[in-house]
Length: 221
Length: 386
Image (cartoon, rainbow over all chains, first blue to last red; front, side):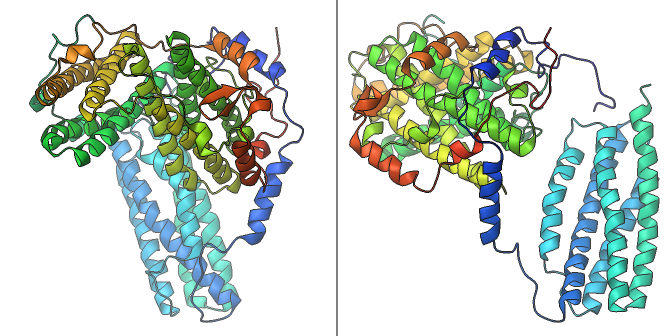
């Protein structure tokens, strides 16, 4: 596995191409029909006005409770996927040069698993079904597809993998703050306290990942 | 390669893979030459056609089923190994750009060397349509993902409007062409037809599979529209192949086409690891050809030399065909189809005009996506020109 960005024969830019001059002629040779990107936006808006939701939640409470259940489902899904991201990072760390402490990565991975369990228990306590995939959980899965591709690609470096983890952790921090705000609004102090503890964990994760990322990125200079 | 019948290749029962062999390191999207990717995509298409033909043949010919099943398993694994060489950092849209590069540069190379003037005209006709698809998909790649299609094309292939996709929709009857005559056609014509037909078929399959993976309705529409043209192209290119060829004759020709294309890939490959794969698969295909020839001679009581080239023609060239494509664009962009003939615009069939009017009644995705679009290096980059 590569650990740093290497020097090689990148063919994607025009400076290395012997036929770049002919390619550049394309701009002048093109006589496009009139119009611009707004035509795409119009089609997107038309479809948007007719779109149905990604999915729904069962009835059982007011709008605020429904939102809380959707967001708890999102966090449950995200934390579970987060453990898989860290599992993949552990594989990279093992085959790298030991710069990232595996025990600490494992610790974060285990805390993500605990947060997943916390979300599941909270959903059940509020009368919901933790096996249900909520609309926000589904979309969080779509968001995470690129992150998982980066983490599981044998070609990516530890620094590239940590950059993807950084995206996940920054989102995670913001999401727990949102959950704390929602539990405060529904007046569930017990849950709010647990979520505040989880948010503290996430702040620590973010700080550590930022440090590892910087170390992995800057080690070439 | 002098005499393909003398070289028996690797016996089919020695053609084995492990899962580890099937899933090798992908090529580098950034560092490998664009034509390495072009060859991978083309050969994946050739193998998929081998599979589809073999299944159809088996369904109609019980005595051939065992041999076909044995060879088909190998072809399947060859297709897997080849297709899995495309790296996961290609977005489906970037892979689409590469598919169109195959369609343009390989079809242009074929059109230039095709000895039959009518078939050459058919290839040039199809070429200008795929050329336009490149322009539309490049606009989508820029406007949807904020990426430059030339990172994939590496300046080998132009991004310009061709025959407008909106005008490519034809009545089915106007996609049928006259077939070559199996008794008179040059072997090269048969190899060309099978190669291009296979390439277009896999492009159609690819677009049909990835089109629904997009969230963006504009992308979903564009894939729906261009997949429809690729279906027309498969119809066109399969119709130029003589339907009077027997099943066994077609099987032998399929195997020869595979030998021919692996040989061409092996000759021109710049990545040593991929070159070794082409070499290995050339030997496998010679083994398949040997089985097909034996079946042909046993069942049809004919000498396979009657239908095989004495020696393989020069390989299809994998190179930029910019000059030929621009010349074809300048001279033939306004041609249309009327039945089996390629005709001036004002002689186009009424059936196609009516079909087009109906299918475009709610607007044209390919026109929408490229409205005002002009490719420029690095998309919005403002390069200083020396």
